[in-house]
Amino acid sequence: MAARKPKLAVWKFASCDGCQLSLLDLEDELLALAGAVEIAQFLEASSAVVAGPYDLSLVEGSITTAHDAERIRQVRAQSKALVTIGACATAGGIQALRNFHDIDDFIAAVYARPDYIETLATSTAIADHVPVDFELRGCPVNKYQLLEVVSAFAFGRRPAVSGHSVCLECKMRGTVCVTVAHGTPCLGPVTQAGCGAICPAFDRGCYGCYGPQDTPEMPAISTVLARHGMAPRDIQRILSTFNAAAPPFREESERHDAAHDQG
Ligand code: SF4
Ligand code: SF4
Image 1 (cartoon, rainbow, N blue to C red):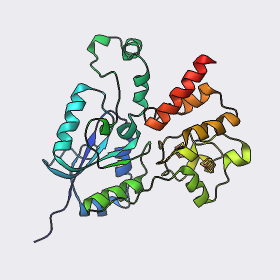
Image 2: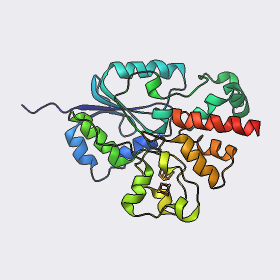
Image 3: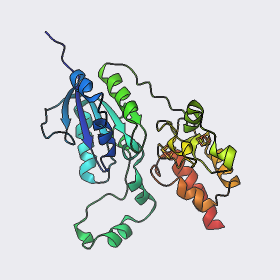
Image 4: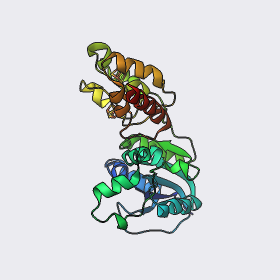
């Protein structure tokens, strides 16, 4: 009798769907993947749903409503392994900018009928609500890292996705450092690898869309950014975009927010 294929489920919370599209973007590998695992729930691709439990759940998006806070507990309960994918699921995403301001002000400014909106005051990572087995960073995630994570969990091994910085990717592709060569501010030293150092390859600095790498030296990067012309407000802003609520970026941006207010 043929062995049962691992059951894969893909779930969406508050997000743009870009990380799920990274899975569909695996054009050359998708058929092999579909042959190796049973894609039991993936509404971005098909309305056909196979009931759980699931061997692996991939979760995109952050928790921004009370309903989603309950739903992620249900997802966790029926998942043997749960992996979060992307900046929203691992760090609250762009929508975590709400965490630093009054959510009612945003709602009043955006919606004609604010009374229809039910939302939490914060946008939080999945790991703030349930245990997570692995976090894959990126906005969106790298499709090959995603394939590695799916294969690893489907077949019972740890994913070979290391937490080194974008700087190493510059070295690997032979890209000249834009900071050293041109004095361009760059967040590459504190940012998780995965994009292939696209921005430095096109002569611009990294703005951190892959979130913090494993051992980010935040005060040190701030010193370098300031030396290359960034004011405290600029540093606060560059750290407060896609991964504003990731703890290393959040703490450093708050330090510069305070410095700006005092200045
Ligand atoms: S360009 Fe940026 S990412 Fe590349 S080596 Fe220099 S500091 Fe690091
Ligand atoms: S901003 Fe940084 S992490 Fe994002 S694609 Fe550019 S180099 Fe890569």
